[in-house]
Image (cartoon, rainbow, N blue to C red; front, side, top):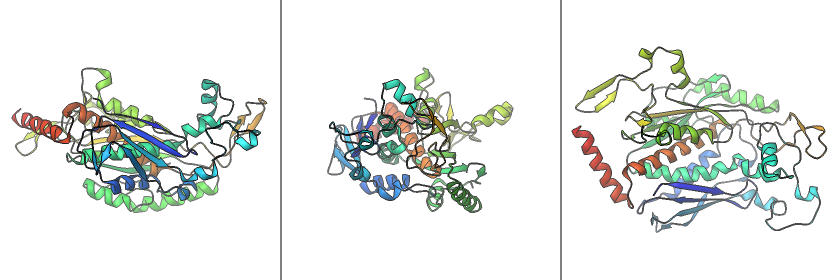
Length: 389
């Protein structure tokens, strides 16, 4: 069975819900670690007031018994504490009242899904679009990815993420072991290991907020301990780097993705792009460098997976751009919804978890079984095959 999930819920509704299908039985879950990942998503210099309202935790309501998965679908919910202020506006039952009581949105915001969604679904209240297209939905995806992350950890696979740049300020990234990178960036309010760049980024975010503007940046995810051969070269939709790229592009406000050195490969000759193959008794087959970011031919090659994504500035501005009222067709400044000046540090956490999900999915496709024990046996057999090759 393929690993898959669905999410449901709105940004001001009572909760976000996710259902995961395809997890093996006997995966022991760490609930504190799960909620820690949700709390990481809420941190970062530049976040707005919503993060002061919500303290995200995931409640598992199906598929887990006595701390272990049963093989049945896993259902989890993340409560929206702000719901108490929106019970009338977001009530599932019909309500009587004017547009003000319903807080109808009829002035679409540039850069959002508002107008496109209204046109596509023939909705004259654009709140029906913005409530679902909101980045609040990524809380459910982080919860799902956090379970995938715990699955990968059982097989020695580690995931880290950090901020590469905020606007035009680029952080130097020292060549740290993955555990040290996780520790250092976790202590940073902008998730960088470069203290000089950290302060400049904080100052820039503060100035941007004072100006009523927003800024974006670039984030990176690293996955270590991945075995050779996840994904496949035989069909376009089985290439794991392609699947990861799609997952990254699905994150709210992400506009580009790179694997390894990415677009830099187009500026170099082949001799400075491709990674020489080496062999030793200790390491087996490995690469002298990792410009390919852990992939060749759509398959993992045993080197760390390196994925980078770029997040545009959040389009909700406190100095709103011009828009058009869908009722009167007259020009108007777009309505302002609560927003962040910069959500790049939080985006790095979301990136980690969508990548972790895709790696876990490919891992299960390769070594799949109905229980953790069966998967472990399949992996050990494959490792022996690799050693004898």
